[in-house]
Amino acid sequence: MKTAFITGISGQDGGYLAQLLLSKGYKVIGITRNNHPTNLYNLSYLGIQEEILFEEGDLCDLPFVIRILEKHNPQEIYNLAAQSSVGLSFAQPTATIHYNISSVLNLLEAIRIVDSSIKLYQASSSEMFGKVSNLPVTLTTPMHPLSPYAISKATNYWTVINFRESYNMFVCNGILFNHESYLRSNTFFVKKVLQDSFKIKNGKLDHLRVGNIDVKRDFGFAPKYVEAMWLMLQQNDPRDFIICSGRSISLRHIIEYIFDKLSLDKNKVVIDPQLYRPTDILDIYGDNTAAQELLGWSYTLKFEEVLDQLIQEEEQNLTIARA
Ligand code: NAP
Image (cartoon, rainbow, N blue to C red; front, side, top):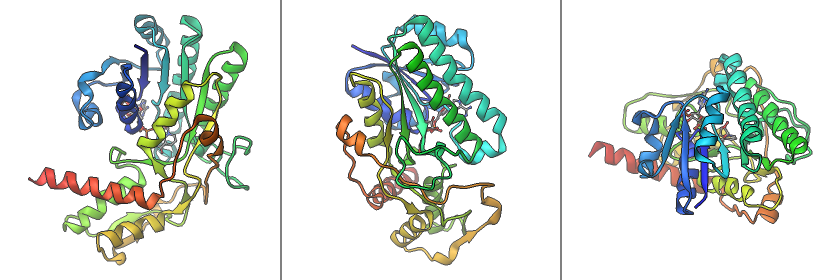
């Protein structure tokens, strides 16, 4: 039986990845800053909370990281923990950069000190590329980060590569584009639009307030994207991969699609300039050819199909909550 650590297990990807690893017979250790049941809602929603062992602590504390590695001897670590919101990173740049950079450095150092054969997956982000002039994004696209979050993720990306090249460690970056699910936090665009749209439909909210909805992003489905994380650590050699759908759509299109499905009046969308970001990416999508060819990862979902599924799951859970 393999043992895997998942940091940030209480988040969206942590839940789906834990579910995948458990289905493959892994012993899963979840690292969280707070293992109070209220923080583990996603795991109980998926019905897997009881199957996971938890270690509570701070990844910025190197002795803690070393101690848990020595205690559990994992073969694989999936590092998903991060201050993951681009918007919040503008409000809290120091905290975001400090946490995101120190946590990754500590994990790499702890692996090097305790057992350099432990494999590490690092949750990198398409946000690192930022102001791109050529699309689709590939591994050779120059990076021009446009937020404190993106700066932290770019630093993580190069730190991982530096440890791989310097110490011959199996550590790699999954560069994931936006991916969504029912478990996405409502501080993120798609989940917020879904929740607010249902509130409007049920007479609990007047308007949907949004920022710049003419930007375009490459959106995918989280449960499919976590499969690529696992595949990356099963290869013979460590390598970085871009994980995306390969197609971008505008935020406006997403709103219109959801409003049409719920028969809502589009005049209920309010553009609020206060919600604009200081700098934003206008359009971005990636090239997932390497992941499809080398990892055998397949992704064929259109985002409208994902939205259909999310609308259905949101509605089902609202009905259950009301019953
Ligand atoms: P998420 O839902 O926000 O979960 C991240 C987890 O990190 C949280 O549940 C939290 O768990 C932990 N965490 C540790 N330190 C934190 C801090 N200072 N502030 C906030 N949370 C902190 O993120 P996700 O969507 O699952 O994404 C997983 C990883 O992939 C993240 O590193 C994210 O940046 C990256 N990523 C995500 C996407 C996407 O579209 N979802 C795209 C590209 C990259 P505890 O409270 O239990 O410690």
